[in-house]
Image (cartoon, rainbow, N blue to C red; front, side, top):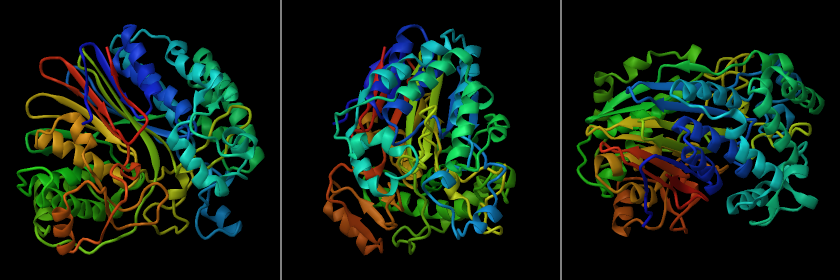
Length: 530
């Protein structure tokens, strides 16, 4: 069993316990859910650096007590010098995934923190920025134990990262992979966070920090320049939304794959499945995923370049047609091209009715691998999802936003409960969201159990090239055989609990006002409340 945590004042769920505790402490001091999420986001950038950092992007869904849902897109665009011609001239047929030339998009996460801070203040937030960054500064300065997840991925990725500028100095002490439990300090990052607390988050883009970032980026050979940083600011957009039975589900618009997450649930809800964990449940969600991914791969790109009307895609007529194409007994042939990525999701809620679903990432594990010496910032490699084909759906172009696997989810259920939920895991994000939501919101499985139950993954994550269907080994063997007979190309993993399946979490505001949160036993975190 994976027990939920219950609270009356506020709750936070995150994939590292120190991040959850940072948010809980803010709530205990009178902060609201958005302030708690900010504190947790800063802390987790320090304590889970293989999954996210200040050099990455972020996406926010905030449900206000009035019922309004606000969405913040904190996704950086490609540098002015990041052109197809530039990379072709350097001899590349595809964008590099590691090193300075992979660090080609502006980090958006810190600007997203600033935008979320404005929402927090609009709802009575009074916590100072230095206080919200306090635990992150402390953990960076005093050190934290390397997580088992970081140690394992450091070993797996050492060969491709050890010679990337700044990586070994930051994450391979004495040139060796740190063991889990080793104390890791990030002094330069502590200084950066401390400075941002005093100077304000905009300093990351226009002040002393931006100057140092830009100088280091140019020195190592990245196309990013200070003018690119200064030109960036997070933006608010309308969230995507769709009805799933009696529930209203929200997610992020392009360039994220939030559209796919909504499509999976909307298609599955039309199949008439009555119970969890049977063939109809898994087959229905897997086949809904395939339909959703085929649509996603034709339309999801920079928000300003989407080739189809998103409202039409989410219309009842289109959804009915797509659901009608699903064979209830036979699997659609697969695989198709897959996306990868590594990320964190965290959520928070408070007694006022504020609920937050937030996701933050550097794309691959450790991103580009580049750690900038003056600031300690680890740069993402999100720009690697661009194409060097000018006719592609997502071509590299200065000022253009790359495709993102990231997508935070939030739902208002038919009985009035508010559920913020999400996960890391590349292609697995929409699928894990669908597993957790369908189990809990549609079939009544308790929240912690809905997250802990065995999961599946169609496609690629965690740097794997595997694109078939994979299942944890706790599923009923008869169900597995039924899936095989239906034509699913599947593999049963050796592990009963595998972080290949992502790190999911959720927080719920119940109609009586009490709060509930749970996080994944596959991760190093949990939920904490007051």
